[in-house]
Length: 381
Image 1: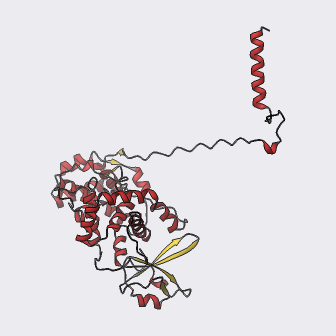
Image 2 (image 1 turned 90 degrees about the vertical axis):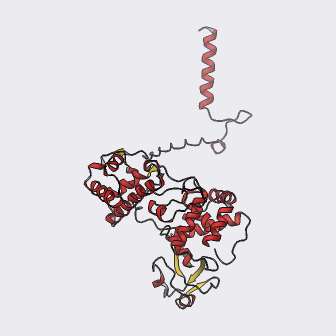
């Protein structure tokens, strides 16, 4: 064997032995198994996350009987040109992702307020909220003065909705609304939901005509909500305001318009500027459960403090003499939290009909306010 070949073979043999032999210490002694470093198993490969189809699939919605009847009604009721509606509808796409996302969560998983709040009131939102408040202090103060809605509530809503404009949605509004208006998934209230989305589709057409925007240019959530505050098109028509005075309403790019519009929405849905004290008060409940009929009595405040006390509800701090509702926040296997909520808390639930949502708005607003160095309420939120 030539010398060069022999050396190569020896080197390969040594490399193989060093790769397979047991580890040794610096003196050449083999280490016992208990002192040998074990190789970590390779991390399992993550499954690729399926992409959400924002573009949509072409279907000829104009051939659908229900769509034709809807367009006939809209043309007659609102004075649209029927041929122009046909041309517009020919460009609308079916978005299956909207259908999948609107389906209710599978049953069986208990609600958990603590888990939900950790997701919604996190450092990212709090830091972004501080920046938003600092950059929009004048608009927030003006809205608070004009409408009586505290800045922290406006900051809380816009933060929960879109993290101050970061996540406004990438669906074309016409695609999402048309899909849900005429192809809503099977559900107990399918017909009612379809009627709702047809109303929002009509409102989109009216809003686009009124503001002079291309309706196909509007983008939002899978349910058709638009801009920083995630207003549905009908809410844009009714409650959105030109709060920056530039002659147009822009909920996507104008934080000032978003702030004023949220305040106007709350006032129209029961916000009371003269409500003193915090919106909610922590409470304990008696074991006899005489208070239980007070739960789920609609999104409204209807009980005086004396009535709640008589039923076995004890607030941690005596609340002002106002009407309250009893709110239960479930925590999975952990004890449920109970709170007394005033009329302004329930005004927030008109924005999103969920106790979790309204409480997250209150807590995020309070966290942002505290992070800015402002004094926080000692008796509640």
